[in-house]
Amino acid sequence: MANGPLIVQSDKTILLEVDHEQANEARHAIAAFAELERAPEHVHSYRITPLGLWNARAAGLDAEQVLDTLLTYSRFPVPHALLVDIEETMSRYGRLRLEKDPQHGLVLRTTDYPVLEEVMHAKKIQPLLGPRIDAETTVVHSSQRGQLKQLLLKLGWPAEDLAGYVDGTPHPIALAESAEPGGWQLRPYQRLAVENFWAGGSGVVVLPCGAGKTLVGAAAMATSSTTTLILVTNTVAARQWKDELVRRTTLTAEDVGEYSGSVKEVRPVTIATYQVLTMRRGGLYPHLELLDANDWGLIIYDEVHLLPAPMFRMTADLQARRRLGLTATLVREDGREGEVFSLIGPKRYDAPWKDIEAQGYIAPADCVEVRVDLPRDERVAYAMADDVDKYRLCATSPIKTPVVDALVKAHEGEQLLVIGQYIDQLDEIAEHLDAPVIKGSTSVKERQRLFDAFRRGELQTLVVSKVANFSIDLPEATVAIQVSGSFGSRQEEAQRLGRLLRPKADGRSARFYNVVARDTLDQDFAAKRQRFLAEQGYAYTIKDAKDVVQG
Image (tube, rainbow, N blue to C red; front, side, top):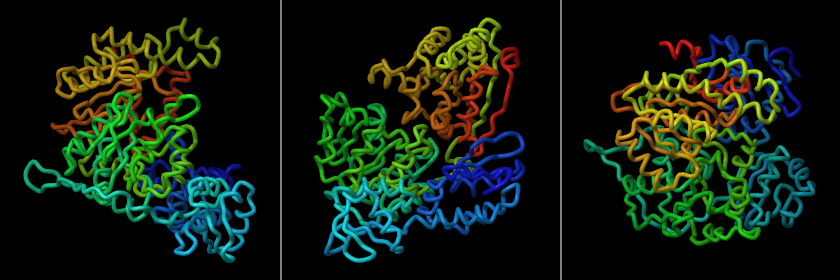
């Protein structure tokens, strides 16, 4: 359908190129419905997918605004057929609606009779439907609400869910806001995020790390004032949530229960880990009764982009409960963003990172890629290695250690994290730096002890594996040195930078270093990891390792 830089691929993915001079101006407008694919020197290339367009539509953006953005910022004239295709794709959202009928219960209703006919004749959808009421309406088995939304999305007809939610068991919750000195109040963007979520009923709020996603969750709980189930990535995150809720709301410690590997408390507000809920024994999930233990009025999914696969199946049965997903990025490397859209809900609020930074709510950050040259013997070993071994070989090269050494010395006196993917590499660096290391085998008690010592400034350097990627609050960390990552994971890069974005007491900027081996998969994967942050406005400065070590 298009020539040159605008390409429609077989899955109707569109690549849009924008002149570098217009990139900053275009970024905010385009990010509402597209994702940065690559950012070379002169051209920014954006990926536009049907799911991105439907998320934009659910958030209130119409086709006219999207088309106007394309016409304004595309490097070349946009083919008319492409504009029509985008408009028609967006118009698909909402032509099917799930509603509550006072007489028939849950129904699927359409504004377009042929569309309903089409989906009703799909073999996988037929068993989910009850009797036909009229030409535009059919009954839906209430237990199939989630599965139906998943299947409709795959058919290209995403349903707008207007069927409402059960109230849940009331439980008084209020924010402990105060305008007095030393008090706190919700920030304007946090308040808007809650309003947008509540107006939509269920969905996802996207905010930068350090921008106060927990407070958005607390404010949603105060709006609901019902029993709440909060799902988190690990026990450390669960205890941080509890501390924050007790400090920021009228909830007491007795109101909030922990449901993890070591503690099994079900209280009006219960914080459970994904790990314990998805634990299998004999093919069964023994802790799933927690989801039905209370008449929950709200379910919060922290770091929703990490939702384990079994949680999607469980969430499909929870469609009558209000659901709030919280994340810094909706990017999923497994391509299951569509299931987040259909089962948790569409994106309800998304604040560009640089906007929040400009308001002073997160720290400014400088991103630097330091490139090292592999020694000749390592370069030959890399060239001869099997594909499955190549990345580990180049990412864990000992040649990176002198660079880490130089950066640690350059930032002496600052709170600094060394982050990596491979445990043996981290152990060696930790021993070299005489610094403690936190990894998967580190006990929860020891993790908390080390994190607390780091927060108090008693430890200035901490080596951490990917267990510290998410939900760890380290407010005064100002420097991170990444020595290896999860291949090309964009969301990991965003989360690792996010460890540094809490505003600093002295107003200083954060520094995020990425040490990569030149001319290898390490450099290629680094470029992929940086895509999301480039979309948010962060530019990477390239430095040679020799300059860093010598200067």
